[in-house]
Length: 404
Image (cartoon, rainbow, N blue to C red):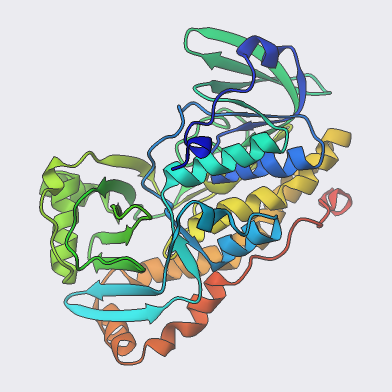
């Protein structure tokens, strides 16, 4: 990671932030939040981006950018960003279950660590004119008719600022909308949790350029080589199974062995990170002067990089809603945003959910993998569909007239 992209530093103090009324305050500096902040700042809005973490931070999920994500970056003038960061080209997707294997070509995609991606996108937001405050927590306050109060806390200090619009991009575990009426989180039946780690050393069988997926009865494990040669490992597993076998490393090892992929030594010595239940969405991904985007609005299964594509696409899609809300808030905007997200991600989310159910292993799964092993082209249509650009959203109006 270059020095210019390794340490996104604060551009403003807490007291200075409190003295402003922001057009948009973005909570969460992952891909969705940082990209949205950049897009809004490029349009001349006064934007503050905050995150509770210190950067660069280590995140092990969402390390693949598929063709849809790359297309969104290119459309917004960042086509060269992945290559500049050293991203590795992804050429194939290898899936295994019960000893059966299949390799499917990928039309596009790269692997890139979240340390580099997140830091770079924050840097792009700052260059566009956005102010940035890391290590800062945010909590929603009262609506003042013209703006929404937000309490910012950095270490032991706190201050209250105001924003005409707040973007909740604080991820699956984010609590910004926790107490907002109608914004409760709904969790699917038979949910899974995420477990992840990054390995400095791993078997050579997990070579660069391929996404590996091991599917077993209680979940799946995905593995991909990053730009620096480390192996990113991310799993979606049933919680009771993880507890029953003795913890994350035992569960991952069991899945790899059951599927027929190479076991990895030293998993018990790794530092593991977990997530709350994955398959969830918000009843309403918006509140008074607040729009949720990315994982904070709903989860998309990240088979070949769909998660990052969802984050970037929702960041672009929210821009006209923010512009409308800054000019004049309309009570119909939250429902209009919910419909926009459903249009943007509904079919892809359903397809990814269908694939998840298919990969819960059984006779049908085994037959499907064997068929793909003999004829990889059978998977071509859905792979190409998932990798094609998301519906262009930058010019779509919120259509609040119809929302009422």
